[in-house]
Length: 120
Image 1 (cartoon, rainbow, N blue to C red):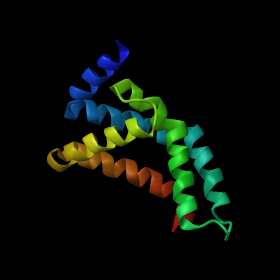
Image 2 (image 1 turned 135 degrees about the vertical axis):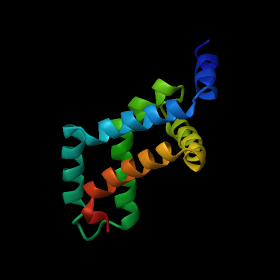
Image 3 (image 1 turned 45 degrees about the vertical axis):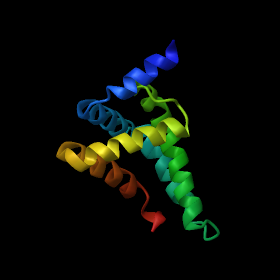
């Protein structure tokens, strides 16, 4: 059934597939809607009562809501935190041996970090 199909998709995720997943996330995190939401969240981070951890969680939630939950299922991962973790573990594995994946991952992280100057 569907579960076996997802498992098969995950098992065959190649470096090219991982790169495609990262490209798709980068496109979502560069989209006007995400940037706008990020700017709003960045403004809310000026609140002194918001701890660094709360800010990090809020960013993670935004990334999940506006990107990750929509993208990871295309690659055979479940649309939940477990699926996201599995995808991240596989991508981290590819990062060690594939320069392109490492570069894309860095680009993705920079895109997010640049949107949140108030995280520091």
